Amino acid sequence: MNAPVLSRQIPKPLVALRGISKQFSNGTLAVRNVNLDIPAGEFLSLLGPSGCGKSTLLRMLAGLGAPSAGTIEWPTMDYDASGQPMRDLGFVFQDPTLMPWATALKNVMMPLTLKNVSKAEAEERSVEALKMVGLAGFEKAYPRELSGGMKMRVSIARAIVTRPKILLMDEPFAALDEITRHKLNNDLLELWSAGGFTAVFVTHSVFESVYLSQRIVVMAARPGRIMADISVDAPYPRNEQFRTSADYAAWCRVASEKLKEAIGS
Amino acid sequence: MSATDTLQTSTPQRDGTDAADLPVFATEKTVLGVGVSTWPKIIAPMIVGILALAGWEFAVWWNKVPHFVLPGPLLIGQTLITDWGTLSGSLWITLKITFAALIAAVTVGVALAILFTQSKWLELSLFPYAVILQVTPVVAIAPLIIIWVGDINTSLLICAWLVAFFPILSNTIMGLNSADHNLRNLFEMYGATRWQTLRYLRLPAALPYFLSGLKISGGLALIGAVVAEFVAGSGGTASGLAYRILESGYQLRIPRMFAALVMVSVTGIAIFLATSWVSHMLLRRWHESAVKREN
Ligand SMILES: Nc1ncnc2c1ncn2[C@@H]1O[C@H](COP(=O)(O)OP(=O)(O)O)[C@@H](O)[C@H]1O
Ligand SMILES: [Mg+2]
Image (tube, rainbow over all chains, first blue to last red; front, side):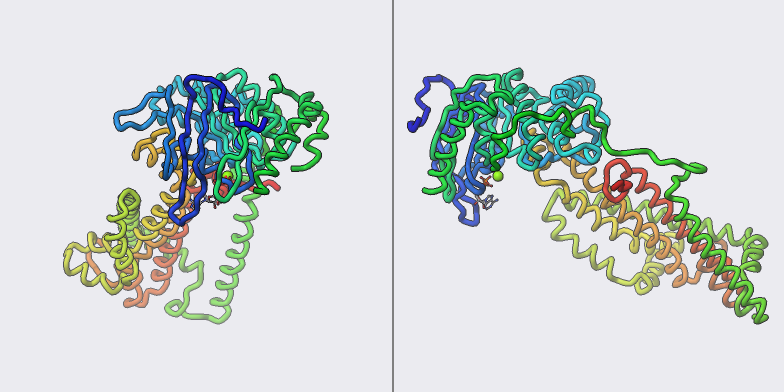
């Protein structure tokens, strides 16, 4: 599993990163020469120690901050008049990042409101999205009335309400307790199996990345770069049984080793 | 990464993120429409006030203090009733100036704040002048304004506005800039227009800041109206409470002077309560400042 698994012959990836580097104005080289193809429908984790440029890379995918060098191509997406890709994506931050003045429903509706979807349709789809994340009946609750895990669910509902082609998540469950995190991991996998979106999941937890993903891209810091590309060939659906299986432990060992190498280098 | 991650064998049924878990907030019992916990806030200062007034009345009576030095609260109350015709006219004038100034302060303050946050250059070039207007004492420029404007009511309005508008301006600017960084990123990702970002993100985020500016400005508008009238010392038909105080002083009608003073204070308190109430109603569901803590 040492060789990068870029050799799979998939004609058109959903997104192709070509020689991406990012240097901030203060001189920090956060990302150096990253090449990565993400096929449509894949569940991919970006695994690496803190400060290795995972967030920076994810934000560039989302169109926040252009790369200093290299290109990000979306072969299957439309481009607007100015040559900008019309990225069809959802984003989940580490914090729920909800608008405190708006109810759960209004928060979930916001992406649709911004896209000028009619109020009736936006409401219907948002109620549906809240139901999908297990928050039916909480439409009228304000963020402060919800627990940390519930707020994160609202945040996920907001990200999937536009039915995006790709869901970008930046350590979304890192601040949650372990029990809640496991539950949200399971629910996320369920959404992914049902939803038909591509998932890019940033994490610093080996266990989380193995449990969730088909493919783990291991990154190292200073400068941020890709060190390994592991495909986790365990079948879905994955559940609590998988979490305790020998298979899972073996994959965790593989990923841990790669991560150790990455940190050591 | 803890070892327990791999030892986890079963997930408890309820983990606090279940939809079945009700959110933690409860409605409070009310007596006469006022929350149980609010009553002490009303009763405690009331008892202190009644005791103080009783002490004052007793001291005036016991020491036989003449009315033109210090009238007792009963006499002031009596004067309030007998002179109500004159005093209420003056109160009405002061109120009109105060509220007109406050409305102008809100309009201009919010409009300028929005302009400033849309264009860095506008803010850079104009904000210093807003500060100059704010730091110049209104008593010092009131005579000038009265000479230039001519009409006394308009002059008083301008003075009161000058005093009141700055807190609204600076608070609203701060509020508009306080919107969460990642929420702004999210709006950018969804291709929100400037107007959408203002309407759905920056204005709501600014609301608590604006309201705390409004609370300050409400009191300042009244102070501005009264101070400017003192400077103007106007007489004639359109005379507010400040003029009544001056006039009663000259005529040694001290009980009436106190009565007018009481009216100014009560007006100030009423404005404070009204703006606090508006603020509470607008923020009570979501903002930490207005939410009842339950832990
Ligand atoms: N806006 C910024 N300006 C300067 N340096 C930054 C900025 N954002 C991140 N960095 C730096 O870039 C590196 C990668 O950061 P980040 O992508 O947040 O890492 P990760 O998400 O993997 O923890 C870090 O060294 C960080 O200090
Ligand atoms: Mg990060």
